[in-house]
Length: 239
Image 1 (tube, rainbow, N blue to C red):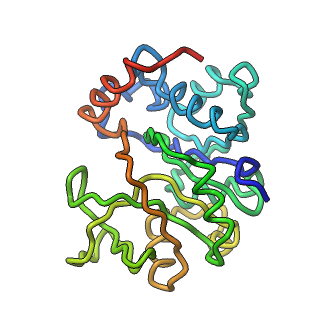
Image 2: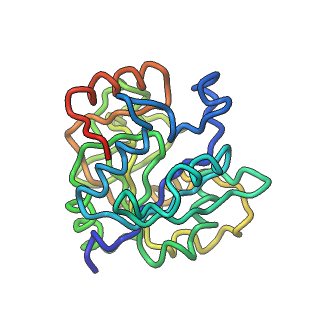
């Protein structure tokens, strides 16, 4: 299996409460960054590496995203949509609901993350592992958020947002890969946090790690959006 053949699930179904009032009537993917909707920048990153099979897990105001991007053909990608339904399913539940569109192995990317990295290299590394999931990590030292990963000797010893350890010097970078077997347990209508699934995997030594050395950008906060806007204005090109 080639990494560029893997679908990319993009988690974009949350309420984005930290970005209100901007997200009161506009979904986060459509917030303007460097003169374009944020999702244009994500699309450019993915398409530039040959990742063109995209599954958007949407919920709040998701119809606006469908209206704007459609099936993705005019952007050189193929987009399908998986809606949460009447109840928010959480990040793990959204992936479980989308499994029929994702196949046996896939990337997962947060809908507010801009990650200037080699996705295919990470995909190749994952496909060589014997573990059902992989998390990219970044040595954070609590700089961008609270460090929550104990990464040592090339492996994840523990990932937890609640169980703090002094060995935790890394943070979840925002890109993961999974085999679909990871989500075999939860029902398709259950609300579950992806972070809890990953934490459980780490405790079973079933979560591979890949250390990234390039900082991440995000639009999950006002300051993060402004920082990314400044970064992109020197290099953005319309789709």
